[in-house]
Amino acid sequence: KLSAVEPFTFWSSLDCPFIVLSEQELVAGVRAPTRRELECLLEIVMSYVELCKQRGFVMKVDFEGNMLGHGGIATTAAFQVTRSICPETLVPCALPVDLPHDPGLLLDLSCAPCVSLLKLIMESPDIEKFIWGANEDCSSLLYQSTP
Image 1 (tube, rainbow, N blue to C red):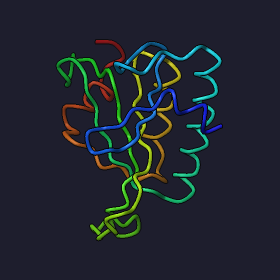
Image 2: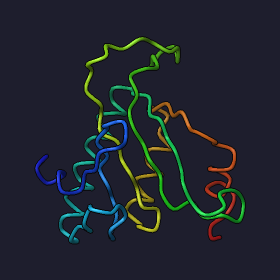
Image 3: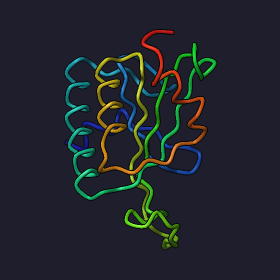
């Protein structure tokens, strides 16, 4: 199943793999999946998220969009497990330098299944979230149904 993810993975500038979930070409060089491929990707990612919930992982979260805040539009959400924060105490911890990166998720928020996945992760009390710029990023998610 992991070979199904490879065509829809890109590597960040910090050499971290991100799985792109979208019905369209969201990232240059990462083609849009077919309907069946997207279903398969979502199945794999849902299993990964369930594992994250079971293990109580901490995730870094970032939203991008157009004029984020009330009246703005969140267009993408990025999630990545971080092991630099202790899940029990939320205290930073040192990591070995050669530790491989956990895969990140890049969700297209114009895609209904991705919005459902976003909701699952964000509403889970079993996954601690660290969010960059959370005030503006989340106000459109909390207070409006359409821009």
